[in-house]
Image 1 (cartoon, rainbow, N blue to C red):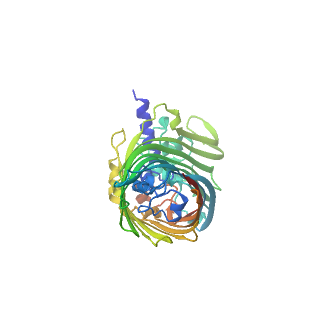
Image 2 (image 1 turned 90 degrees about the horizontal axis):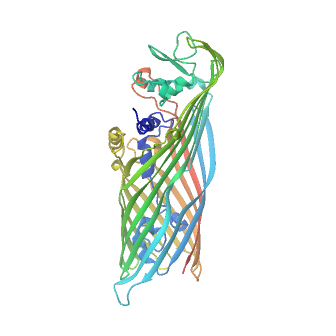
Length: 514
């Protein structure tokens, strides 16, 4: 007897094999690995460069040695609005999509105490914080009615995934099986074919229009506990423990319409929510070789995640009251739907993966009390991502794909702060995050520009404002990918759009030293 656990594992594998937006296990691990240095509005105005800085609650996540810079207890809360937009060119049809989301990048508190009189330990601090290291806010939309330029459709996707040895419509867990149950296709000894008899042709007419939309939400966040100490105002040491939380939710809608066919509209809807937790540690050091210069180094260990998946998939055919002969009877096809869902199963097993470690180095030069310039470089080896083979899913192929297609990168961040008056500060920053893929697919590289102002009062109250602009360009986005060897045999490629994405963020931090 097949257990529910085995059934669910089979569906879990299929959800990624049939994913409309090409979301695979590898994509999930990459999203969990793509963290940015977040933090307070002040640090984000500096481009996120902060490894050699201290005295800010952001240090709890980036470099806990920065806790040694505090000379008072401090509390800070950061909130912001993200205005997200995307532009797409899909078969010479241009579309735009926009939205806005609220987020809370950082909330933290640091408790400071002085060392013993005349001792080497001048002070030490302990802090706790909640930090969002990456936020998955993304809307995508593209459509085209330039049907003369289409050379493939969803039926190619169905046929590319068809395996006669595995085809079992009574246990619908794949795209071909769902399409069969929605009366998009039928099966005979030759394989699958379109239900409308068009001179023996297995394909329907190409669509007159194709429309795709996706809404992605979620974040990488962590609960951090860190400790740092100040040794004679020259060396600062710190250690932190990070409890990581990952939530990545994507809802996609794909539609094809036809003018002169039994099938008027074909819809494919998919919802996938991947969520889990992991743990990592951060070690850090900051030194002050001369009064105007600080050098920082921090190392964040690999994070081991345990994650779960929730999903729903729907395939729908809307017909023009088509009379279909099943062989036993003639039925009228109107609105035919087939679906599967993880919520139908009680047992929901998980799987595990690890994200790569991160090594950060930084330097800050201070211009007396007038300000400073700071620089960070972060090394991430994305080829070190790994899916664990300790569930019923075999990840050997995925791990080989990671090894063959991902690389080590350096991410760069730099910032400048200038003291306008005793209480007002002006800031600017820039960050460049490199593409982890060797082949530059999906153009994951991004650039971030930022600027802001801050106010510090004599009683310890402070408030900071930041504007940040993030951009990604020339992204290739395909609603689905035709599987081999079918794609080569028929010499067809899936529809694909070129996209640019941007996010404008307004951030504010309020806090108090006491």
